[in-house]
Length: 504
Image 1 (cartoon, rainbow, N blue to C red):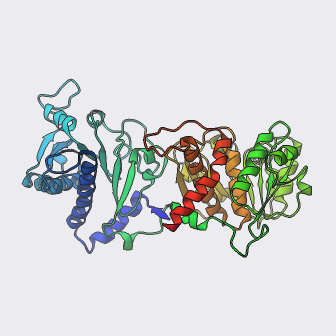
Image 2 (cartoon, rainbow, N blue to C red; image 1 turned 45 degrees about the vertical axis):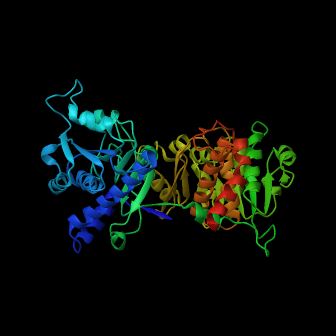
Image 3 (cartoon, one colour; image 1 turned 30 degrees about the vertical axis):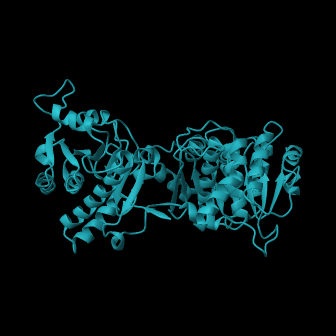
């Protein structure tokens, strides 16, 4: 897994590092890495480094110092470097001196020859003629959107941007963007990923994230958040071995759908099949429809007739009436791991006595979207979706998968997985039913619930992306909207791709 650390954790680790390594030495390590990655971007877009132009957007403090030192290193490779100083009197003195010694220029963002926006002519020229812009405006302590002068400079940028540590204007903790902010093509960060690199809009604004080791590893505590690597998902995904049979591979029960919503039953059951469950038992009013689409599913009309299962996926389309409540209660009393989605979550919110039916020793997974979360928790998730999911997971002693473009998966003990899809293709009716079936199949195979949700969320997102792009291998192909059936059909492709990643 990739670890994700808060700014406070990173700062504490830095203080321990500075006790044995002088801070200026550490800064130059970081700046050198920024220079190397900026040179890589220059080479990719222009074919070389020498003679190219880089503009540094420099704020006060160490983040600006990193940019200035990076400019000094780039200047030594023949790059024309101009630092645009947003607060000239507060610019990092040693970094600015190093840039000037190397032959770089520094100009104020505002000047006497400013245009109507207040931007000085030299500053405007530096930004508009650059091949790459380095964002060193603010660091991890900053909050809120860019100030007007910085925002105007960023608005003029039409070339790739390399951000130092984080894109300026993005909230370091939540990834929220509440106004003007840098949208980076590459973010070079130090010691470890920060929440803004993997959460919400911040993940999009960060672009590609490169983590640079500057000596913090021995001083970092347990990460605040975790991100699964594709290869580890592929390696851990349950596939049958030579000694497996349909029972050892996992038997999952699906209680979903109704006469009104038979599609929910078809999608959830199909996802369990596609996820390589050893056997899928469907129980509900849509049994005939499920059999017609998935003949390998053992389908019955009622949960009481389903037979032995190792986990349940329940909720999509079961309704909010007495019959839906009875289905949920039966599943909760089974003593098996349960993934509760959709109507199940609303039933919990409407009738808190249902919690009494739960076997306290059986794991429970709740998979709400924002509206369902609000019903369950009594309030919207808000900008701190991690904190909100953690609180509800602890309150109900359940794994909570809070759906969204960035999916948050919180365990009752406080662990959090983040899955950022970088696209919105799963935002279509029925895609949540597919996710429910995937999680149910993984629970039945014995995967720990927190990880089962993480694996399923990643496969779900990847399958949607593959379906949206079809057979196209063109990286410029923007993709096309899909339905849940197309997402479901791409699940085996997604699993295959992850398994290949595990072998490389």
